[in-house]
Image 1 (cartoon, rainbow, N blue to C red):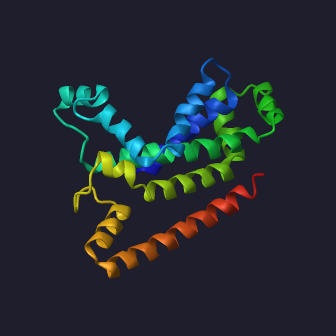
Image 2 (image 1 turned 45 degrees about the horizontal axis):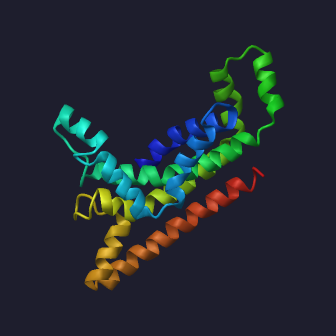
Image 3 (image 1 turned 180 degrees about the horizontal axis):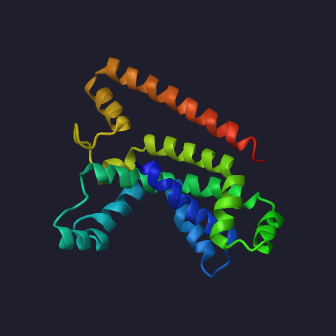
Length: 204
């Protein structure tokens, strides 16, 4: 679910950063990239401050609905979304910036609108990079640990993601379960990286 959210949001911000010039562009780029370089627990702390019951966003949601995202599966999705978004944005932006600007100009010359050019020219030409970005984002979301633990907790059957389950198995000495999940995780991650490498190798 986090990846499904990351793809459209990441493409939007990648397009804005690649094709638009505006004041504060560098600041937006920094804000979007921060979760990539910050320790996951720091990112999680910021999410708790923002979306906790007393936070600016969390309190508004609670006042309107009586519901809080803290320690829910939705919190795990949000944490994974935030930490995976920078990979999608960075990869997609590189793919969009690699497109020959003359092809885009020709589309405009032929009378296509900006949205038509985006969907008929830009995105198809950048599809390899978008696939690579989505693959990396999925891998990052799947492996998220620190921010998820801070925001969603580790509630069995509710918010314990695969990385949290591995941690719990190892902590309790259930090495057979931990080994099985680690091997599965490694295999899936290897396949995702292979897809990403094959996609990016055709871009640059």
